Image (tube, rainbow, N blue to C red; front, side):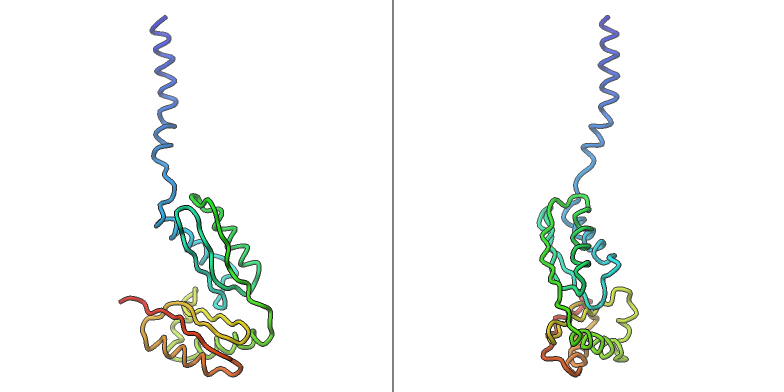
Length: 178
């Protein structure tokens, strides 16, 4: 009788032990892993283009989204993909949808031609993720992203300033560390 009870207890322990081991080995995404997963999901969005700028901040298991987009669907898509990442408990969406404007659309196209058409900068246009982001709001241009050197940053700013119909240019391009 005692041996039968011992076998039942031992069998129960053998069934429960793997579940306990699996539960202890699964840890939620560490903040560094979570940040890289958020970045990956955002850059993989199909509507994410050169005229959009997405940024994020990870605070524990809460992700705050920032930036500007030209299409409202991109704002909701970004929030949706980040919410589905394991380890994300909350998403605060502070992405701004830029106003519709034929004038801004004309400026966007002209900026794209001016910056990526410049022979010294056209290598940036070969990247599928366009490292120089062109944000246009009410005729005001902001350049976001990362370039290889200070000369490229300055040249992009000069080209952006030369486009007809632009009221101001803010050059927020960062230089990559060597």
